[in-house]
Image (cartoon, rainbow, N blue to C red; front, side, top):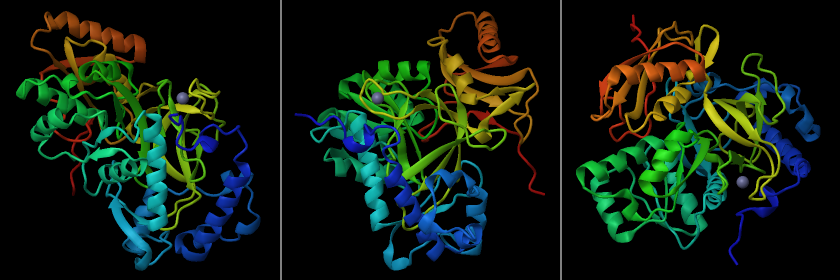
Length: 443
Ligand SMILES: [Zn+2]
């Protein structure tokens, strides 16, 4: 009989039942960093790891990306939180560096085992099985996504098709021969591949035979209209997922119910939610929006404790899911540093993209928002470029309809500017840029 979960004891655990496992691993992790990490020896002075209580976690100071960046200059190359020597380091990769210079992340052999297991838990929830052909159209470079999914899917037992992002036209023609049941990619890249297949190869993406597609790395799969479009184009079910290069490429993923992303890092990571304005820990219950914070509890090489990820998420479910998994389910609202404020109203670029996507097929769904400066404040009307389809019809009326929909759904005034199809679309990149800011002089 097919197993339903990769890690059933953890994925369906009764809420609270993992307390002793998490507390003992947290103590081990604190003891480890206090012994080996100059950064945490300084930060956690006076902490007794042996008797530390899980309930006191929120009393520890947070760690920020900026601290890690500065620490990597002080203690090159991995920073003052690195805890092992070169003999034990099996891999180094760079976090994608959405804001500022990329930071480096190291992994020991045990850390890589953790990654493989966590990726397998999530891919299993997305319907990938050992008999499946799992296609990985993701970069195999400093950004760890491609490599870690390759390793995790091998660990799961699937036949992996590691095409990367090279030679996409050749990849699509090879896939016509091999077929593929499962793919893991980003919304931008899978959309680019579909366009390439349709417009340049005369190939219907449905003919490849994908059943399930996992998409992460940027908002998209969790946006109803974007998801619908990708599902229809590929004839496959789309699963939203998210993680972070500092902990694991994928930590949250949807199940077959597609009703928010489950947490899969039990025993490896403890997540917390912070109020974005006050920075205080908030209870993760349905309807709450907060900034994610992670604590590693089973990490050797570069453990981070109470690390601010910068992702804002909404808790969309807090009871047992129809799939049987327990714990909260979330959707990604956007990155905290991507949020715009228009006359006191919080605006997430991905929400604007979803409103514009609802006008498909007259628009392509691609947008670019123009911000006034480096900060979150933008004065209305907010200038937004939108791609139109050649047969969109009367553009002036459509422009007014989109501006009205934005005003009604997102409560701010927009000024739509039309641009031709293809002007904004990701041309083979893994992620798309939704906000354009004025260039800052380097002087
Ligand atoms: Zn579920």
